[in-house]
Structure formats: structure tokens, C-alpha cells
Image (cartoon, rainbow, N blue to C red; front, side, top):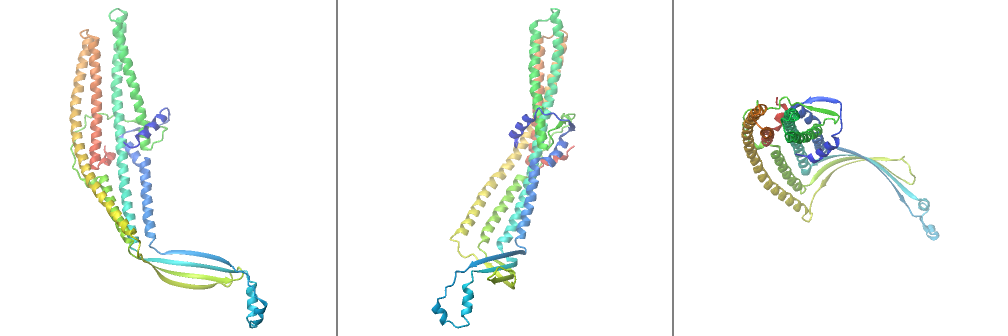
Length: 448
């Protein structure tokens, strides 16, 4: 069961806390709370939303892109030294121009443009879209698997809690009977009709049972806290569990459902991972192909000796841009081969894990049949133990049976009750495992 170490620690820390809000929960109401409020399910939903945006991001890369750019450059110019003899030999119309350049300190260049581009052809782009959509499908399956796991965990803890309540009820009944016997023995002892050792033995038995009862009560509180965390219930909620239907009289002999591996989230995840691995090969192979895009650009530019935006001249341009891969020294080939080998490894795991899923179904079917048979045996054994206890108890009241006989059959009855409760829990867990093995665990959310 996932995260139970953390949950147990959290529950032990939260155990003394008392709250005011109260509501009685059965299994269905707890499951309905869990599928909405469980933190792992919420996280899986966020990952689904994130994958949707990833698909949008990938698609957007091939749609028209509009961008703007502003650029300013100051190019410093070294001073120009004109020798006197050289200046005298220059034409009269050139000398004024050189004198202006002599005083020029820098050239200021300002440009701004808006560019519209559109991808025309890219094999990598179309493969990337397929990868993003396949990844989104994987997150959808993972979300369903997370929900399955949470439902399984909640149902398991709930059934363990019912088992604790049944054991507690049995202990309370036996303790009450022993306390009555203790009162009778006390009176008999005061009248010299019973031994002090008999009274002491009953008191020791009661003390031991009360210790066991306290351990059960602690376990109940811990499991309540675990349920609150799994179901996303506030810790100030005083969780009351409905135990009115904690019986198996209405349970029919289980019918083993048909097995279809395609319904299992674990199998669907493996198939989706194979699909992603194949797309990764195609994405690596797509790097051999050229990319083609078109663009249009509108520019404003100015060059001047003074920093100024005046005099900017417009210009337009249009063109094609092709990115053509030619030689990568074997890098692209190595990536393709790595991806192919990863797919082969995944294929090996797929075959093994698919067989394991089938084995899990067979084991779950055998365990469910065995648990059902054991439950019927323990039901008969409990009834027999109760019958024997009632007879010995009556004989003890009539003075026909000893205290040792009574304590012995009372211990046997307690063992029979506990074994029955444990077998009932085993049967319930086996039923969950059967649903888990056939991919139908979510059906218990709406069972009546």
C-alpha cells in the first residue's frame, strides 16, 4: 500500500487531536470523498492539464509567429589626422568633407523590425505533435491508475477498520461476561464458597483482555486518521464509521470474472510507453530531414552621426529559410540506434510483465476461492465455539463445570471470533485483489 509509512507517522502525530465536526461514513461515502479530494488524484489531474498545455505548445510551434526587434549600435570612430602637405594636394571639394570626418566621434545606427514567420515543412514538428498527444494519453491512463490505487487503499483500510471494530465488540462482550463472573466469585469467596486463586485468575484474564482492547482502540484511531488523509478529509473531522452492515450473511459465493488484459491500466501504460518509444525513433530519424520556413520582415533603419530617431527609412523583405542537415559525424545515427535498442528492451519487459498480469489474475482467483472456503469453515467453527461456550457457561452456573473449563472455552470462543474476523478481512482483501487484477476496482465506488 502506497505511502503508508508516512501516513502512519502522520496519524500517530495527529492522534491526540480532537475535533467537533461529525459525520457517519460508510465505504461508498469515503470513496466518493477520496476520488475528489485525495492529494494524489488532484496531482494526477494537474499533470493531465499540464500535458494538455504541452500539446498546445507543440502545435503552436508550427503556427505563424510574430516577433519584433529593436537594435541600437554606437560605433566609435578614431580621430582622422590630415597632414598639411597632403591637405594642400587634395581637390577643393574634397577637403571640406575630410574636415567634417575629422570631427566625427561616432556613428549611431538604429534599426527596428517586425518579422512574421511560418513553418512550411518539418518532419520533426509533426512527429513532436504525435509525441505530445501520446504523452497526454499516458497521463490520462496514469490518472486512472492513481484513482484505482487510492480506491484500493481506502477500501483496504476501511475493511481493516471493520475488522478492528468486530474484534473490539467481541472483546467487550467477553469482558462483560468475565466481570459478571468476577462479581459472583467475589461473593462466593466472601462466603467461603470460592478460592481466592479463582478470583485472581479471572481478574488477570480481565486485565489482559482490557490491554488488548486498548491496543485495538489505538489501532482504530490510527486507521481513522489514515482514512482522513487518504480521503482528503480535514483532521478536525471526528470520523464516525458505519458498522451497521459489518456482517457477511448477505455475501454470496463469489463469481470469478473473465480476464481481459486490455482493461488493465498497467497494460495500457506499457502499450502507451511502447508507442512513445516508437515515436522517439521517428523523432530521431526526422533530424535527417530539412526544415523549411517562410518569413516576411518590415524594417526601419537610420545611420547618423547624432543619436536621433528622425530620418529613419523603411524597408521590407521576404524570403525562405531552409535548415538542411548534412553531416553530424554519426551523432544522429547513434541516437537512432539508442532509441531502437530502448524499444527492444521495452518489448522484452512488455512480454514479461504481460505474463505477470495474467499470473496475478490466476493468483487472485485462487486466493478468492480459498478465502471464501476458509470463511465458510470459520463461520461454522465460530458457531460451534459459541454453542460450546453457552453449554459450559450454563454448566458453570449450575456448578457442573469448573472455572478452568469456563475460562478455557471462553478463550476458545475468543480465538474462534478472531479467526473468523481475520478470515473475513482476508476474503474482503481477496475480493479487492480480484477487482484490481481485472481492472474493475472502481466499480466498488458505486456499489450499494
